[in-house]
Image (cartoon, rainbow, N blue to C red; front, side, top):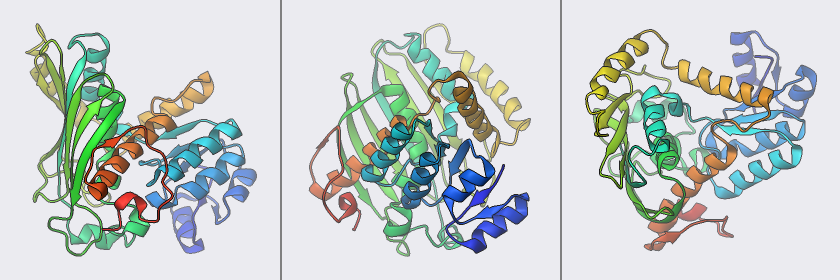
Amino acid sequence: LAGVWSRTQQTANGFACQYKVPAYTDVAELIKKEKINLAVVCTPHPFHLEPAQQAALQGANILVEKPLASTLEDADKIISTCKKAGVKLGVVSQRRWYEPVLRVKKAIEAGKIGKPVLGTVNMLGWRDKSYYDADKWRGNWKTEGGGVLVNQAPHQLDILLWFMGEVEEVYGIWRNLNHPYIEVEDTALAVIKFRNGGIGNVIVSNSQKPGIYGKVHVHGENGASAGVQTDGGAMFIAGMKGILEPPVNDLWTIPGEEELAEKWKMEDVRHFSSIDPMTHYMERQIEDFLFALDENRDPLVTGEDGRRTVELFTAIYRSTRDNLPIKLPLYPENKNDMDGRSG
């Protein structure tokens, strides 16, 4: 770590003191003085654009915390700026490096389930008032950009898209079911048509106490199924509790491999106990990004991948607003309602 930037000097100084690095409130100055090759953007979602653009224009490669942006307009501007500047762009989605997730992806690529024709996301978690009070930007349309769709669900949405491919149409709905002290949605559902002819559904929520699980399952045209429980039990609350349970392959019916899931589960539990799950998978993603720079290739999670997640949750917001199925691809609108996120 060579330096830190924040929009306020106080925040920058606090982080810089903790990690013994210089503090800046000017992105360009940070990139120039510290000769930064990779800038990681960790601001609240609606504020990714400015530091990402400024760092890219100074020649730094960019890794943006998920989601890439809270709106398609900002996502497209970040992607365009990085392309024009000739720098690489990645988006944090460290759950792709979970071994159970990689197993499902490899099984799909090997043709073990045939064409994936049905994909599902079920993410049933909990966030209480203390979570929103811990960071005042949470829970507001202007400063968080959205609720569960923008903050928690991008992990599972990205994995679903990685498994199933491009989306053709979305019909969705969001609600705030039991968090009256926040503006944003705590629950969203969607039915999806994929371009490969497959279908899917998404249920994501922060309204189940205690949190139950996060799962992504995929079913193939040959009848075989594979899936991963990305989060289990009382799902961790970012920055407040640790990850309590390892990710596991909770569904595996590929012929001849049905008994492997239990073997893998034991292996995954052992592996989980030997690492710090809060940092290990992030380290693997950063390592992949650095190798991508050395090898002049795309990182595993690209800016375009990040845009697809933004496009999916944008379609759910627009579908709720218009009470209609939304055809993809989507582009920014010349409206002031944030795609229907104003309630």
